[in-house]
Length: 265
Image (cartoon, rainbow, N blue to C red; front, top):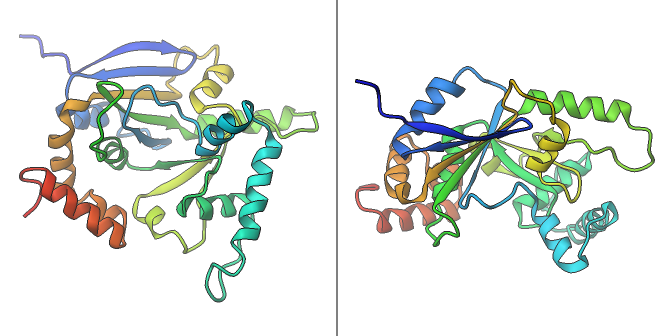
């Protein structure tokens, strides 16, 4: 007897593949069968399938100005540098790059051009499912991004750039600062994409002729599987208690334990 389908590829366009899992039960199968040996991929979870891969700063600036410009991002960063003076404790570590400043701001609620990613598909799944708010769609999404392919394409864009503005490339980085313990626990890193361009759109623009490889994967999973997903991830020690090593994480863990049957003791 043929095995019951566990997932289906519903779309493929310019390096972007959309995969629908029929159940959370098959998430581990997909990772083991398809992703296990693909060490280049990084992951990000979204509560709603129609949320795009754009930054909080893009959304904020578009709402205010109606358009996006690199100078708006520069203004935001300079404001934060001045506003942070005297508020980082005694002898704070030196932040050498703008990306380090952005990462610090991201950790403390600043609207930035950064997106958080993780090396773990299961951590990404946790962030896709942990929020209990009612959904705009019936699917949660885990994105997988081919880091090496994006790096190579970005390097080619930078090399070929001859204009005066910033080249339309994507940066990947991990801050060395000790000021973000959450990032360490989450196996985290950041992308910094061109202002006003979400990452899926960037991939489609720069991999138009790609027909063999998946550069960005949109793994869609039923929202209705939230509770079994969170119970299973908690058994794997993936929860707010481990991902947020502070009182906020402890409180959120206790709230989830109270809300979901058989979540913890």
